[in-house]
Structure formats: C-alpha cells, structure tokens
Image (cartoon, rainbow, N blue to C red; front, side, top):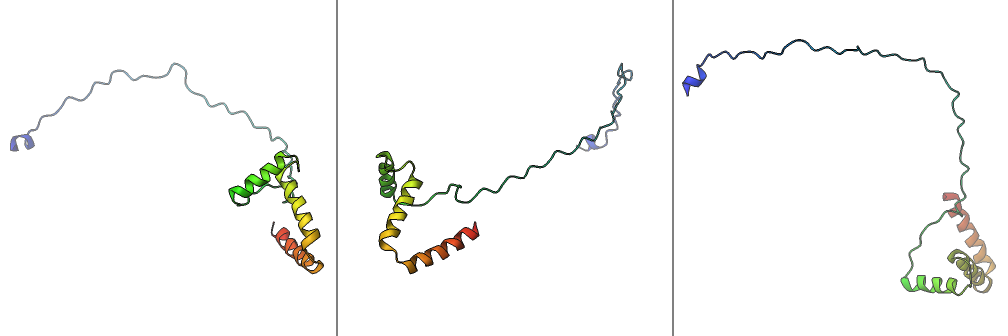
Length: 113
C-alpha cells in the first residue's frame, strides 16, 4: 500500500489540439427601445355583494326540497325561491319591531362585505 502513496508517476497532459473559434463572431446589436405610451389602466367596477355567489350548509333533505320546488317551476332559481319564502315568512310571522331589528342586522352584514 505504501507503494501507491510513494509512486511519482507523472501523467501525460491531454493534447487538446488546435484552438477552435467560431466562423462568425457574436455581435449584440441592440435597437433603441421606443417608449410607448403606458396602457390605460381600466379599473373594474366593484361588483355588488348581492350578485356574488356563496354556499350555505344545509341538510341534503333541505337541498332536495329546494331543488324539487324549482323543478316544479315554483321559481326560476333557488335564490328566487328563497326570496319568495323570506317574503312570505316576513309577511306572516314577523312584527314591525322584529323587521326593524332584522334590517339593522342586515345593514351590518352588508357593511362587512
């Protein structure tokens, strides 16, 4: 093993041959950039929160009942059907004081959106 450590053999360097050069040298031709007018930024109008969709967790049986009523052409959409149900409920079961409280709470929820 000591023979491997003490071995002074010089290896022949690699013969790389003649230097290779490209036939056409690279040139970086940069054309001046013309400053175009910045595009006008179009601000999107904020969409009302009433138009946005969201989900509500209900039992499957409730979902099925709503879908069945829509299928029977009682309303065009589930949203419309729920609005009809709210109106009917408020006209029969809610007093004026409760209606005022409801409106105040609804204003709070609308201001959060």
